Image (cartoon, rainbow, N blue to C red; front, side, top):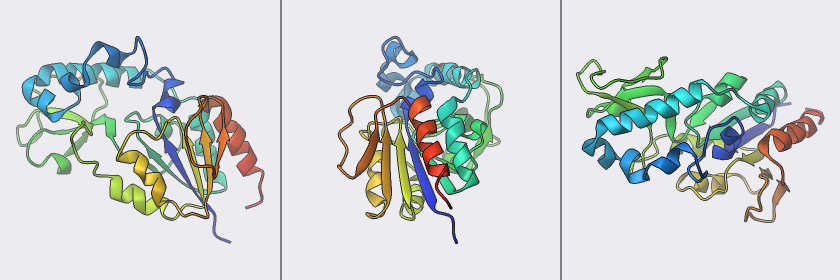
Length: 232
């Protein structure tokens, strides 16, 4: 019998429990900057040094952070299910916790890419947290963060849609489903799939969602234990 397929759709809330601030956190990293200053193509054109420094800080923060119980629990699902993680997060906490298949809708902070015309074809791992002005790709263009900025296309969207169309179970964690176009992916899941949402706040979702009103580090292990107790 074929294993059931689980899609985990994760957002900033799951990483926040590891200490990574979200856009909306008061006192967080983002609060010190206007989005327009650091997360748009226009910002890069205007002041690449500021954008580079901002993402250096984000990268350093990510590298110093560890996965939490929610990340590890999601990886455990692979023992019994086919699992694809679709995440809006740019950190690599899912991978570090052991998840094998992760689609990053908004890019990856652990990679950089060319800022030239062939940017989408030239990705490079960035093991050191600091990218310096003057660090260039083989064609001589300054390296920029491999992240999807506001106003840019989401290149992994089609792949994510293809995956969720095959879902037997959909688990949404750490996102209010308000960030588009990413949030629209959920609408491509089969109507007969089982749907779960884990969030400590009240989130406005359709009635067919099974809602677990807990933090990710509590709610995800609880759900995973439940799903793993079922016979394959």
